[in-house]
Length: 215
Image (spheres, rainbow, N blue to C red):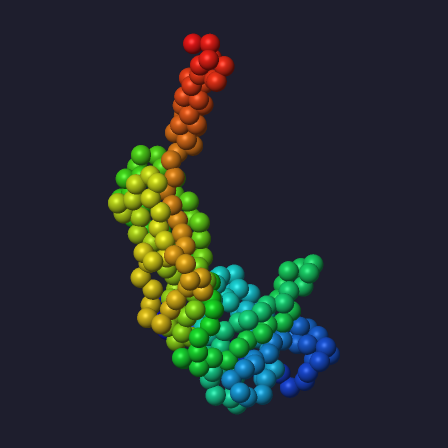
């Protein structure tokens, strides 16, 4: 489960419009906006270096933050969009949405595969295919899982793992109703090629209609 909610410190942006945004970027800040929660939107600026560090750490859009802005109460937020410069690919604007602890949101949660060494199918040369390295879930803002764990122990070639085999946190559910596949263990390519060749040989051994008639 997710640990302590990290703080994200920002400054209130007094000006609005393109001029204020350009000035913020000159001051090594990234403009943003906080919306939702039945209150007025709050324009903010984020320190550029801190934002870059958060973005490079990964899962920025799947992380619940405790936003701290001087003069305002702390609020839980989640990033909804990061606009980037089309040439430099650097952030130019960030949108955050306010959340209550009980708010429900859709997030893509990464999948971690464990105990590969205990999967007989992999020991025999099978290949583990991660069909869904991320799964979109409906989660509670105060209880966002860091990852979903798939235990590969005991799996043989041909076995599959579906979403129903994963323990999900209470109040969490997939956005897809059916029991979809997360991963499978397939035969090694050499074995598949041999099976295909054998199938072709077997087909050649079957007499054609004309051969059967001549016989």
